Image (cartoon, rainbow, N blue to C red):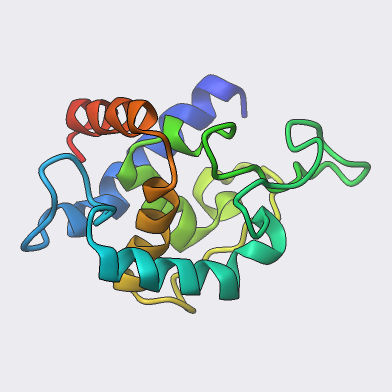
Length: 154
């Protein structure tokens, strides 16, 4: 699958997978992630440490050479700080990737070690992890991400 097809596929699945979260009572106007909620961010930091840091780094720094496939055809785990591409995706897409895993979401033989956590973490834990990640970004990146969410509808 080419990059355009993958992006379209991710976008469609993200809208469907994120729809339940969009309709949740109390969803933020600029997206799904409660990144301004100190309790959610603290919970997300804990869950991130337990489930995500082993691949994405304890400081959200990702793995070395994360843009280059390894000998087995897999991309290393990307950073979730402002140097990565996480903030280039709207909330619904981030929720879908975290819930389903990249291989399942993209399909068509795409290779990824990013497993889905939908059977391990509940909805609030997934949102909290993503809120924690977003809470670490500089204000200008958060503003750009919020604008993207507004444009994407969540």
